[in-house]
Image (tube, rainbow, N blue to C red; front, side):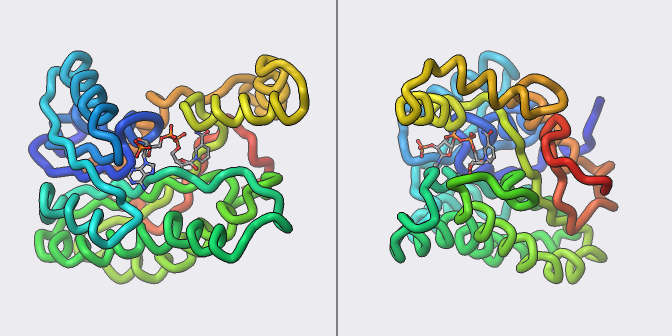
Length: 259
Ligand SMILES: NC(=O)c1ccc[n+]([C@@H]2O[C@H](COP(=O)([O-])OP(=O)(O)OC[C@H]3O[C@@H](n4cnc5c(N)ncnc54)[C@H](OP(=O)(O)O)[C@@H]3O)[C@@H](O)[C@H]2O)c1
């Protein structure tokens, strides 16, 4: 399917691996000029190589910590005025509420709320001027349902959604959409690390942890990053111009509600 965005420029933050990488790869497949971002040059080079091998597309890389103003400006210097912005980075670690320090809370807010807002502030005007823009914020199912140890993720990301609710409506008539994609349980490095930590903490095999997680999901499996990436590419397509201000769950039915 031709998504109608070939030749557009996309900046995909936090994309050397995992869900960000899957979005970058699907956008590259759609003919988009992609910039990958992460803090580690080697992982980024490996990611760029994989996209070249699988999609036959060259992408550029921007090594920077997206959580800092310096890093954000460095990435935007490599990919100025993107048509498509995918906001992503690492999520907060699993920490029980009473163990969160003030600095943990500030760091979580910086990464998962302030950083995407700053990136949008820095890119929105050029999208409005061009009459086309797609902004996707990768957040989490934790916005809609509590997950033990991820209160910070829930709070910062719900805050981001609410913060942008008005902004998305203010630019809808200029061809710019802003949406959140909320992953459930996707098989990435982050999830595998979660299996490892939980297995160690509870003294059980990792298989047992992943099995019990899968049992919670009506689809009875974990999500494939490719499914996530292709949904993201569709939301960036010319066909998705009427979808804005939405929190879109991709979770195999995990979050149970009637609406
Ligand atoms: N996987 C899931 O099931 C799931 C579920 C709910 C929510 N999420 C959320 O979705 C997001 C992506 O998850 P994932 O599973 O794809 O994670 P992942 O496999 O750990 O990948 C995270 C990516 O972000 C990059 N990154 C992290 N911190 C960064 C920073 N400060 N600046 C630039 N790049 C940075 C990482 O590269 P470097 O480390 O090399 O910088 C890596 O490329 C996270 O925020 C996570 O909380 C994931």
